[in-house]
Image 1: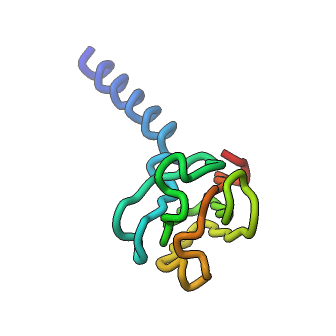
Image 2: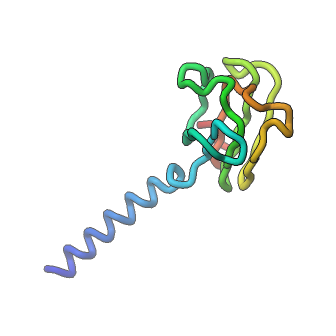
Length: 114
């Protein structure tokens, strides 16, 4: 009986980890260069980052394998775009002319928009 309980607990734990895997290794945005300061995990598209206190406040990001972020200069996915694909870290958006210039973001995981 003890083995059955241990097996069941291990099985449930495996299911939880497997279903949460993308969220555990998801893209992050940061308020400062070098992936420093306030951060947020981004797992779905956001048409207005200002609603979350992130509009014109993104200075760096980390994008794991399998993810892609398309940043837009205006809300509602309008204006110029800046794309970062996994596995990439952009330490300074300013190097690309995008420091504190992001107002919306489309998020893709394995090619599917989130």
